[in-house]
Image 1 (cartoon, helix red, strand yellow):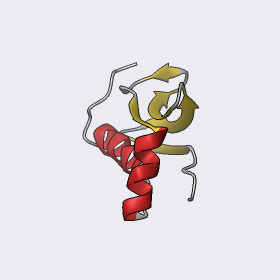
Image 2 (tube, rainbow, N blue to C red):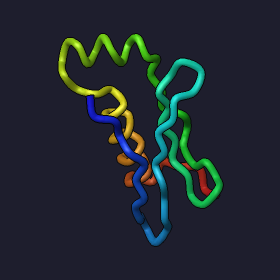
Image 3 (cartoon, rainbow, N blue to C red):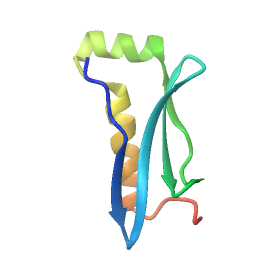
Length: 80
């Protein structure tokens, strides 16, 4: 299974970074602008992620990553 890497990107003249971390038994995806978190935490527990991957050979973390990026690109983020 391929692990998703953090990604920096620019939107509307502002730099964002999508970060993926393992926290308390979950894969968590968060978006930051500088040191400020500007998104909610998108997360999935390890067991659900593994079950989904076993069935579909796709990463739920990858889907959360794309949702987080799409939300930023649609202007849905906390203004830091």
